[in-house]
Length: 186
Image 1: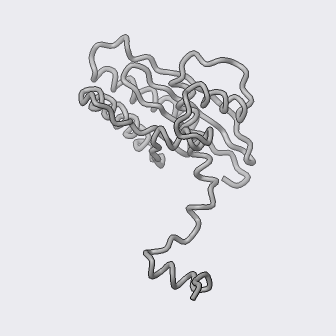
Image 2: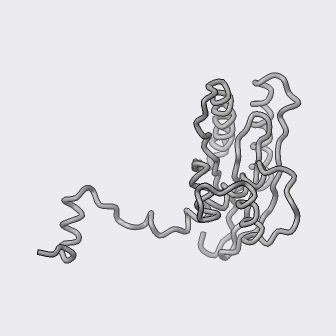
């Protein structure tokens, strides 16, 4: 992402409301392009909902041509049927991104909150307030599903900027001790 413009599409999957957010990064400046929701509660048929999810994500990809696709992983709840529906919604969203050869990255809700606010247990309002500061936004959101999607995109940007993935990861204690012999006290 050095010096050139990149766009990240973030998705907060849902079967009643799906949030989406697109951010643009140019010269390390982050700007919101669009955020919104796809309302699915008006459709009774679950397969029709999945079709609308696929079509909306495909439309956003064609319109904005993002280079990256980030999606929030479903949290594990007690209602198996809800988890199944949410997993299908997430799968359809990922399939749409893959259709356009976008690299897909999945983040847990806790990871997104940690990346954006510094607190993995932050509430939706706290995430929104931090997005307002980082992206210099004034308006209030209609749906936190949209702001959650923007947070997923911003989390992905922060993860891409982190030097940690570039570090050589040791392969067990033997490798660590060999590479850090100077740190061993005898």
